[in-house]
Image (cartoon, rainbow, N blue to C red; front, side):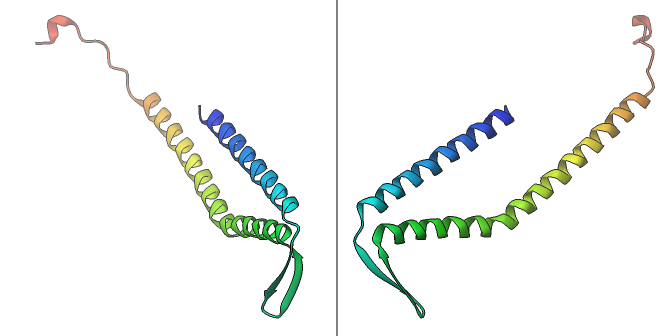
Amino acid sequence: MGTFYRIFEMSLFLIAALAVSVLACIFALQNPVGVAVTFLSWQITSSVGLVVVLALALGAALTIILLAPTLISNGIKISMQKKKINRLEKHIDQMVGAAPVLPPMHPSRMS
């Protein structure tokens, strides 16, 4: 069930990203009006649609860059926890295998 959920989640994310991309392209094509953007000492003149699409792409890129360390750290922690679980499961199997098997009690001795 976990694998199916991950595939479904990734597919849903891909569909959402594609929808946002298509909407951004439509917005850019429908807004060809020129606009001047000034940032510190830079000044760029471009269409409103292109400026908005570039701002959207820059925001997405910054989000990925800022989230990358957390995602990598969580991936490492999950990997370590999986290894620990496997080691503990092997230890449990060894303990169960090493436990002495007691003979069954006869009903007359149970009193």
